[in-house]
Amino acid sequence: MNGMAGLALNAVTGLAALALLGLVLASVALVPVAGLGRAPLGRGLVLVRRLAVFQRRWAGRVLGLDSATDSDPGYSRESGRRRRAGPELALRDPGTRRELTWLAVHGVTGPAPVVAVWAMLSALDYVFFGLRPMDPSRLTTFALSMSIVAIAVVTLMAVSLFRTGQARLARLLLDPDPAPDARIRELAASRAAVVDASAAELRRVERDLHDGAQAKLIAIRMNLGLARGCRDPGEMLQMIDEARQVAGQALTDLRDLVRGIHPPVLADRGLAGAIEAAALLCPMPVEVDIDLPGRLQPPVESAVYFAAAEALTNVTKHSGASRAWVRLRHAAGVLRLTVGDDGCGGVQRAGGTGVRGIENRLSAFDGSLTVSSPPGGPTELTMEVTCALSSPKISHS
Image (tube, rainbow, N blue to C red; front, side, top):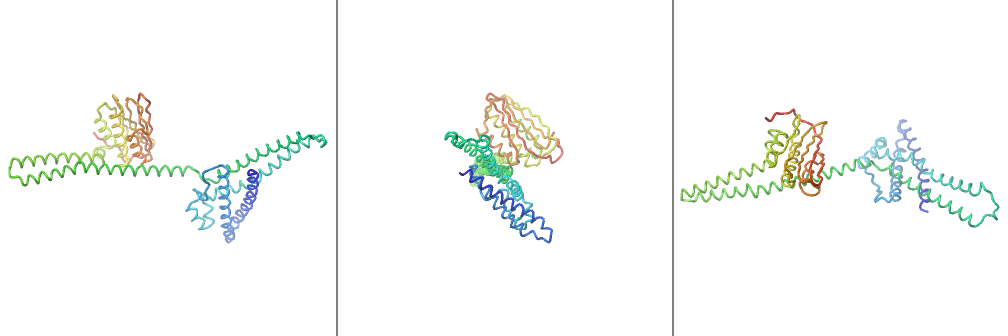
């Protein structure tokens, strides 16, 4: 009964769609004539909207979707402003255009299944009773029962197919393209990852300052205070010398901290030189192959450098490799960095903070990370960032 009721409902809404389509087309034709069609066009679009919302909800229930809400993601606040501004602007809205397309299609497909079921029943009646006219007295109860069962089964199957097909067609025409929504969710996740990474970086800087340079500066102040009150010249000189040594250590800590925020070599020699310098710090030999015809924007350089440094650090700590390699290329507007090693392999994307940290750095620039690390090795991390060169190549010799 639900299937038959659905077909009947679609037949009614299909006829209503045809009537509304005629109203909209007539109103559009009358708009150039002193604006006579503006008022009926606006009312017609409101009715189209309500009918589309009703049909979308019905289709959602039929298909068992989680929600078929009144709010269309492609028909948002901007759509509302356009509709309030006038029917002409509303016609430019993607949501309105989808609804008008559905209106034209549903005006034909809505009543069609009812006609098709009626034609099918008529054909079955003709096959069973028209081609072989028989004496009613010869029509056995079994034959009559089988005929009724066959007609019922075919009818129910057809009704179910028509009902599901109409629901899928309605969702196909009325639902917006999911790609923009997926992209919005991806960007939101990327932004959240960047915010988390920035907060973690700030906490690291604060911790390093507190435990490193700040503690040493306090020690310097205490030594100088003690030296000031010391009457023994030899002891006073010893305290001053200790303060001087601690000051040197504090300066080293500050330099390391600055290097961790933005390495001076990155500003002086660019991404290629900075990666070469990072490779020299690795305990195993690292083959560096870089072909970068220019400089990148500073934020991109910084993110890619730290991603490469993190990858090389992971190689040193976890891979057990005897050698590693770094390849850097820029072609067709894409920067591609590959860091590999001949270690034990088995790197998992969710297995540690290193890979996640690299992904978070790249996500801020819509970059991607591909991990190839079968058990037993070799391991290759391929990072790609879409970016442009900002200046010609500068020699760092």
